[in-house]
Image (cartoon, rainbow over all chains, first blue to last red):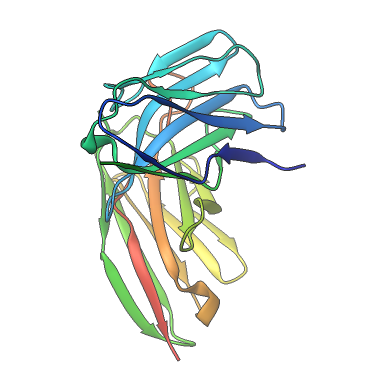
Length: 111
Length: 114
């Protein structure tokens, strides 16, 4: 049981490039979340999903898109990378709406 | 929306002493309050949580207290050990309705001095 896995671990993008951050969980959780963590700050919710085919915006969704075609996967897409998107991105999943289990994170730098 | 304030931002204690981290929240509808520990380069890990129908919860050296009237909750770590050094986050959420996801405090860097 690997829990929540994220790829890649690190990535450097140039301004205007696009990329997809991958997130997979093997716990059959319905709920999945994407957060970003900026230095010295708590995590902020970008998008979340309550099940396959259902997604909704969190606190800071601008510049991002998500999809949820399966229970296991919840990729996060950056279309036109900007320096303000330099951050550490965490994916999480939960069985109910409370206890969340986090992945190891993706550290993204946009130059 | 919910706003969570966390204090202090840094806390240094001697090994064996107790550490207390405090959080306040703004949304009276919040009813779930987890605490996460984050070690360098890793994702947050849940260490303890409390729901609004409970005033206190303990798990070995860790305890959490909740005061719903004052809208604050605290993490207590007793007999601190070097492996307790990490960043601790409190969070709040409202189960069963409204926007999902946790609202986090800004974190407390706990340093255990040998």
